[in-house]
Image (cartoon, rainbow, N blue to C red; front, side):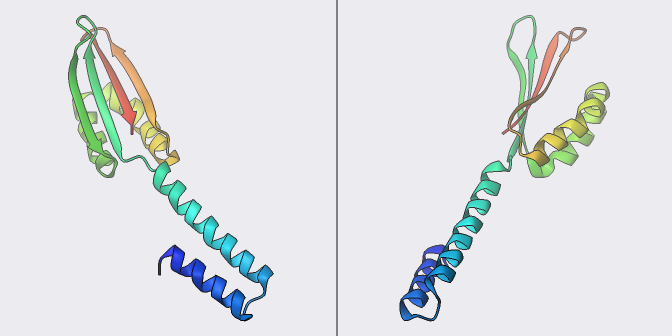
Length: 123
């Protein structure tokens, strides 16, 4: 049943006298609170993880990869093989940021030996 149908049903119960106005108001309020919680959860959930590698000398992007959050554990395992010093230090922080619903840049490191900046964003 859609939310608007549920609201109409509650209003009809009030109108027919089967439910007191105070009880109906509480039901309508509870219905609205549940919808707001669902909307805020949907908004708060990050969907993508973006990894961007930029050359520090030319300021050109070398890598710009987007990974679905649902595959993040696989991505962290792969990252641990490719760049162990970065993946081990940041993996737990990145997972925590995702769980908390944080968006934006969650990690940045500059590798002066390779002349690269690595940034990780949660979107």
